[in-house]
Image (cartoon, rainbow, N blue to C red; front, side, top):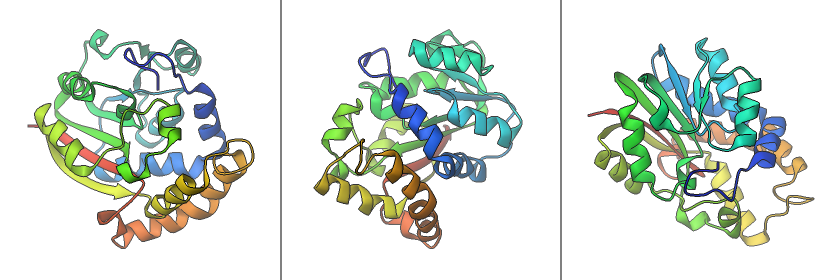
Length: 236
């Protein structure tokens, strides 16, 4: 996602590929949210991209999310899809029962400040759901290419949420098999044309790797390691 602090990367092509090839993965992220949070009356998707997850959120909760997305190309897609988009969260007057953000905070240099701004838009009974890249050991050149400032540890994101005025309700890893797949990619390299990162590899991951990963997560691996971190937090 492009931010006010990182205007060189919009990730539009990557977002289109993720929507086209990672159907199960995208639904899984939203289902993780739905399984942790009671039915909200209002939803804000922070860093919505082209609205891939907002469309699923709408179907799951029967609510059309308000979106925040600074990239103009992505914003046009959101508007074409019927979402009320804001370039900046500060321009929103309402508060929300659910603020949802997937793979966004890592693109923001001053993420603590972003969390403080998000906190102001959360209702008293509201929940924040975050899906973030995990484990610094998985850091590769690709993270730099797509505009990441960091991969999170559970300790780091918990500390920053606490400083921003949140209480962590739930935190665990996700995609345990993806952890080893990412390590393998770190050793062999990223190749969006024909290797790891290509359309074929994304489809293979979605059809075969993710289902195994979900099973292993369910039996407890999510408490040990994973490619991502899932966090549910509320206001203190």
